[in-house]
Amino acid sequence: MRENKSELLLRREEELAELEELGINAYPYSFAKTHSSKDILENYTQETAEEFKEIAVAGRIMTMRKMGKAVFLHILDQEGRIQCYFNKKLTPDSFAQLKLYDIGDIIGIKGEAFTTRTGETTVKAHSFELLCKSLQPLPIAKEETLEDGTKIVYDSFKDKELRYRKRYVDLIVNSDIRDVFVKRSKIISSMRRYFDIRGWMEVETPILQSLYGGASARPFTTHHNTLDTEMFMRIALELPLKKLLVGGFEGVYEISKNFRNEGMDKTHNPEFTMMEIYVAYRDYNWCMDMTEDLLRTIAMEVFGTHKFTLGENEIDLEPKFRRISMGDLFVEYCGEDMIGKSKDEMIIAAKKHNVEYDPTWNAMKLLDEIFSQLIEKNLIQPTFMTDFPVEISPLAKKHRTKDGLVERFEMFINGQEMANSFSELNDPRDQRSRLEDQSRAKLDGDEEAMVLDEDFLSAIEVGMPPAAGLGIGIDRLVMLLTGQSSIRDVLFFPQMKPRGGIEK
RNA sequence: GAUCCCAUAGCUCAGCUGGUAGAGCACUUGACUUUUAAUCAAGUGGCCACAGGUUCGAAUCCUGUUGGGAUCACCA
Image (cartoon, rainbow, N blue to C red; front, top):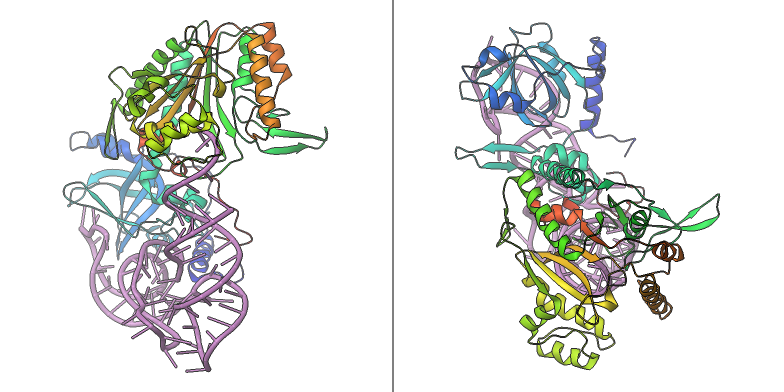
């Protein structure tokens, strides 16, 4: 491939050489940009024209129409596209350079704004310069905007593999995807702001750990050379954050990557971003109120609305979210509360409701499967499902009135789990016995059961205030709010299989 | 990990029951001083993902490999 460069690549190198022969630096150091495309497109009118007599814009050439002694092109900057106009009369000395410019090159233009005969706000160049010569051709997509404002894109770059592997090209060429990432960033800042103004502190805890815990999942393992010891990438944020509550902080949160060594599909990437927050002296009831308010605040700040259309569903975050116990949900969909029922009873219920199951599963697994197949997909409007069986919640405090249950909720929107929260378990005796149960399960072959972490137990023995904890999967929240159906479309660089030796 | 589908020019795609490649855009040359999927004329461009097999002959049929997508399993 290297030896046999395509003609397009060679042509770019020739152009670069020709420019350099003309004494032009194709990679200069700076450019005094004064306006973004958006500044001009939104604010230029006949009345404000005086303010746009001396402006400087910069961006990547996306389209080019060379017409003898005039050239029209569109540049793309962070805010969008704007057309620029060049005329040999206005720039007699440099006009010939344009011949050596290509789609993909980055240029800076000084000039004035005007409106073309066909009504498009355009920058007329008084002078211009090359800011970066591009040596690789971009996938060319052409856009046409119809009278009614709808945009048609021709020959759009849509090979998913190439888009993910060459995201920088995707971001240039597919302008819509860029907005998803802008929204992602705003969602996260909005969440931070919400926590910060309430006095909860953002913290950082280790990603690289000698013991992993806080969730049921298989970890990535790695090795520390100097210590000559096996280490793990964290699977959850929970345990170190709780240690900080023990240490005396009353509200801590972390937004960071977790790593789970499991399958990949459109809702799972091996590394994903999690937010976990722990607030002292609060319980899960308070946390439901806070979670509702948090989501509404983010929705208003970032999208200016509480309503989201996802496929056929219109989601409304405005009304108070439904709160219903897991047991009552089973009554609603299954006719009876299945929690605490025997394996045989679960199987009867599974058969009755056409839930597929494996006869080797235990009662908890069957319960979970009936939930996922029968109930979860129906939880379209925001719903808090509360009060889980103690067996599947080893870090949640037992329910104050309901035997065998814990104070936990999961929030569902559009049939998907969006948040998980408990009144945090702080009774050291109970916590020890729960983790010992997990250890036994691990010995019995449950690869995802939690590892017993003595230091964590020791911290709980020192004493953790009563607290509410909440976890929100950021990627899935962004998917929900931006209407993306694949996690790969909300990650800049989703995990891909390596391509051995092959370029492109 | 399992099943199904996909892989042809830089991009988007044609290519029938086998006869060694085609379009539009991009690129090159020329024309054109308000165009906008600019237009007009003439060109360049391909180990048809990779490796085998069947055949006189394979982009096309068969097998395997690699990568991707979808569904499922594990999970968030």
